[in-house]
Image 1: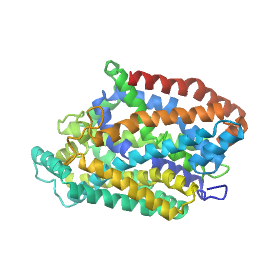
Image 2: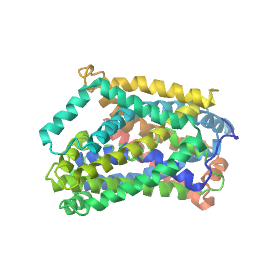
Image 3: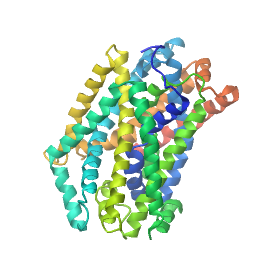
Image 4: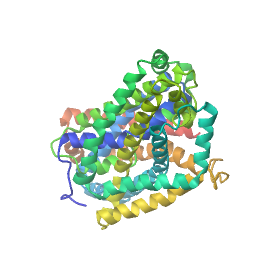
Length: 446
């Protein structure tokens, strides 16, 4: 991969692509349940603060490295380090990012496979007239059915890698331009429906009236990890996208637009979900099962519930599809940089992720008792460690490289914000973002 690589055709295409990478399970599945588990509005305040103080500056750092290098992540890091006589070992950060996103995609496709199953069930009216115990038992039965889980996992990965194999213009850009506006339309429709429910006011209070006594060091670490996860930071995915960025596009404006769109999705999803949950008098802190147990129970008892539940799971499937496609891209780009064709690289990534994903599939059945580390099964490990440790560590190293190692001339040109804009970005990254990430990581790990 070199300076002749593909580019996004328009500035809008780049923003939609990065938003597509960011918007997914983090916003629609993880944000509601992790907010419910960590105190509601207090967690939201921390999350938004981390998006502003860490997310935006680190997002710009990651994209500008790719934009300056115009290569795959490993090659960009190695090239830019070489220009200033720094260690070429910085290129290994690209490998670390690829490993992180590999772990994430392996569980991402499994959970996304759940959305396929639940969309089909909702469309067929399978939740209508069923009691809470029956719906909960149905979910447990599905998790224990490794064949159905594996089939959905396989189908979702096939959908993902087929698009990635098509390339930037024919694959990623075309799908993002089609699906991202549709995703927002569905989300606005759901939020509008939520406003008509009895629990709408309670949902707004839960999300926007913070109780700061709920904040603990662990809640702070969860909020930071989620900011990285939901913005797809720290795994070099955005670095790959920066390599395709149009020449004259303002990076700060593009990053700001992505952050607003991303947080907006999380808030709209939270309003829609918690409105239904509070309408039915259910617990917002149900954990990961909130999406696949609590919501079907809640919607099943509401007027037109089957229709709105179908819309919701279609929304979830679209969001996870665009996100997984964009997460797979840096791994494919890395293999392309090593000499493989795009088609072969997509096949290697797809098969490898599929094989590791089977361990998550079996974590609910044959491997349920296998606890390799910290008393967690494999699924719990890959949903926790990569998102809450690997992504912040990767983001920290990316920020250090961009703000302290890279040539000032290269970094300033890639940021495209002028002398004063670059100085502001550099000060924030050096003296706010980097120390804050390091402090939260250390505090959370102690």
